[in-house]
Amino acid sequence: MSAEEKSLNFIEQIIEDDLKNGLSSDKLRFRFPPEPNGYLHIGHASAICLNFGLGIDYKAPVNLRFDDTNPSKEEQEFVDAIKKDVEWLGFNWDKECYASDYFQQLYDWAVELIKNDKAYVDSQSSEDMAIQKGTPTSPGTDSPFRTRSIEENLDLFTRMKNGEFEKGTHVLRAKISMKANNMLMRDPIIYRIMHAHHHRTGNDWCIYPMYDWAHGESDYLEQISHSFCTLEFLPHRELYDWFLNQIYDETKVRPKQREFARRNLSHTVVSKRKLLQLVEEKHVTAWDDPRMSTISGMRRRGITATAIRNFANTIGIAKRTNLIDVSLLDFCIREDLNKIAPRVMAVLNPIKLVITNYPEGKEEWLTAENNPEEEVMTFREVPFSKELYIEREDFQEEAHKKFFRLTLGTEVRLKNAYIIKGESVVKDAEGNITEIHCTYDVDSKSGSGTEASNRKVKGVIHWVSIPHAVEAEVRLYDRLFTHENPDGNKEVDFKEYINPESLKVITGYVEPSLQTAKELDHFQFQRLGYFCVDKDASAEKLVFNKTVGLRDTWAKVSEQ
Image (tube, rainbow, N blue to C red; front, side, top):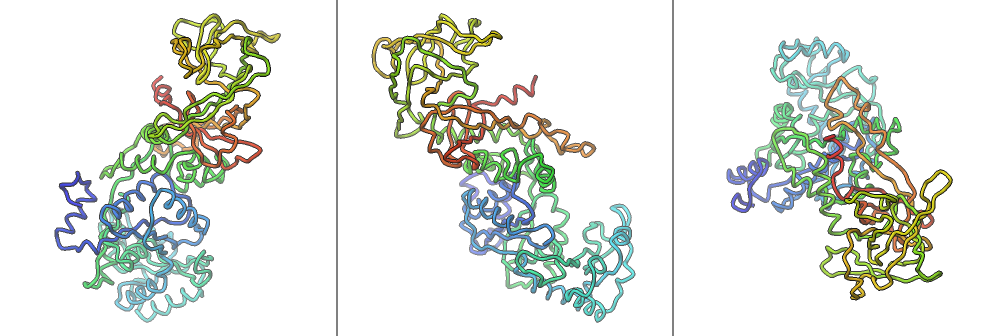
């Protein structure tokens, strides 16, 4: 890649500068380092697209490395889900790595730190350590155990490893400076005792490395050239470099940590802890609930990998955190689904329509195009009969002049079918309309080429033939949160903003071509929005999730 080929973002400029300053292009290697303690979300998707996108642009390998240093919160389920998400987004990793692959090497290096008098075992309580660490404006004070002998530290650390001590009795700390301006440099913890089963190493270890120790050293072991993190890790860079200094061999690539800003999405939360809360407290059904900001939830809702990648590329990389309006994501979803989703007919709020002059018992199959965006147009056959369902909103007994759908005495075209005219209605005892009676122009069949078929009417409405209609459960999803930044006010519990109308489940009717639709098949229900088949669907029961409407109605509601 060269600066002449395209405008570079600041991350790409860092790489270009390193290449100009002597880094060989065959030494470039990137990584995506998730912690397997939950499902990936839309924020992770941006990081995935960044790192794997750099790998594609620079023809460099990208590792998928799991930061599995906290067995109390990590599970194989999360590892499997993360791998599935990365693959689904369209990316392939070079090596599948785990921090746990390096536990022995990390331990050996920690022993070397002790031998070089750069680490010590501290036996204070966590409360005492917090007090002793000082504040951002006042220096810390040395631990009373900071002067332990190397021999005593080695003995205690070995016994920590062997499981002789209870959790919380000892930690291993780096010996840096308790007066450092950066509080992360004030003798940070390297190891803590945890008697917890690890999903990969079992019960082999009773001590586990802290993130700051494991991360940079893992980058070094994998010879990662550039370690890109979000902005909250900027203060950690000094510690990242200090740890590397202790083990760095000048004949090898030295990883470089650099930071980019999170791009938060409106009306969502992306904290794994808070997403877990939503699941555990049953505000949603699971991690893959279609209202969740998780990649698995978005996939289940019907959002495509292409749409997410396009969204990530559109918002780009920045140095300053900002809030991206979710309507931009919706735009990317519509833009992709418009190209790939077949147009079908479905009625979600049905009312019966009877064509009184259509022959009793007759049915015909009409030709309908699948998607006008296709390069080579394809078609399907749709059944038509005397009795149809139409949307209740598409009829008014008495309507104003700007109502261009069906009313008594006016004409509309039934999509792919005939022109009909409203004649009368049937009402129940409460005065509610239960049936609409109309007549059709027998010569007005769409595509027949007759003069009547070319006649212009003001409205076109969709429909489903009642004898052929397939009943379906339809889940109408909306924003999970009513506030654009539900996590923005630390004084207010983010759950206060949960939208009580985020899910409505209704029964609708779809044309019979959808009877064989499979999980994650996408469709545009004409005039209604984009929908996909949910995993709960079966041969006996169709279930559709609403992915997104045909236009952004939320913005209009928000402005009122």
